[in-house]
Image 1 (cartoon, one colour):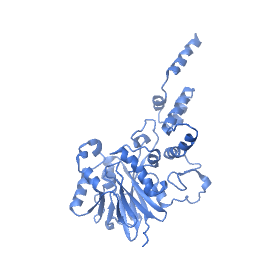
Image 2 (cartoon, one colour):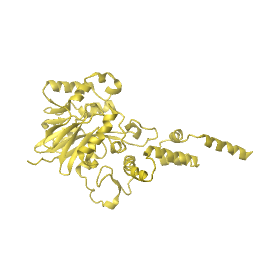
Image 3 (spheres, rainbow, N blue to C red):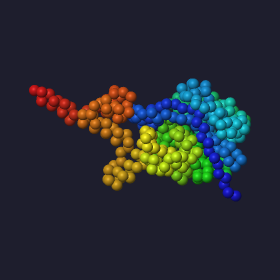
Image 4 (cartoon, rainbow, N blue to C red):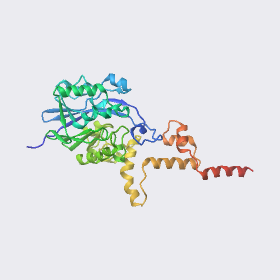
Length: 360
């Protein structure tokens, strides 16, 4: 019997503005361009069944956490023909507030959770604010009540939910985070959840600043790519995921020559002429394309941040106006440019002192 294939719907429900440095554990102050986070839940439909991946958060939680609801989860599901009360299976990728909230929804569902995640959120790690700040006690206690009510299906590592749908423990971001692999007409698609928030994370091998184990998160990138078989079928939590899932071909009306660059044809970071290139796409391009070129030239690889720093510092040392450097770097204030790039070496100081000799 052939394995069924499924449709995947990306339901964006919330948004928060953020600077790029806030999305990396090693974020630098000069990464001050906009890199906002979008919040999604997912619906997997096919084979006579519907699975929802994660439950999001509601308006009171958005207010508490200073997020903006753009479309309530239940309304987004209804827009694609799914009533939340009819859903029988919900996969909780992990127990952070933005993935297991909305307690009033899905009254008839069974929840799929990793053993390790429940152990994590009810154990000693939650004694530490540095870890527990991303969780809500009400969400955790509600899941415990679901356990006693017979509404939780636990999984230990890799497991099959239905033919063509499997969960896989990744860890890293939380101790028991799991991704979901789905059979589609285009091949397997992996819903990564927070195993990678942006393509910039998996491309550059940098990690998000909220995490349990950095080593597991980095190893998880390889697992995601192996499960999907192609990077453009790994869907991070954020970015324009709905476009990627809905149609991985070129968008209607655009020709291949209209593309400046893409990870794959129709992939997640597509840039078009006459549109500003995003910093996220540029970072991904850099990680993809420059390593091989530099290696062939015998030049050690340097990430985009190092190159950016060298570029700005060199401009200042050559006498470029600080106002122009500010504009080129996309900084919000001249003070940021001066603080980060305006440092002087000994030779710079000597050169300036020699200016006085000329006057004498």
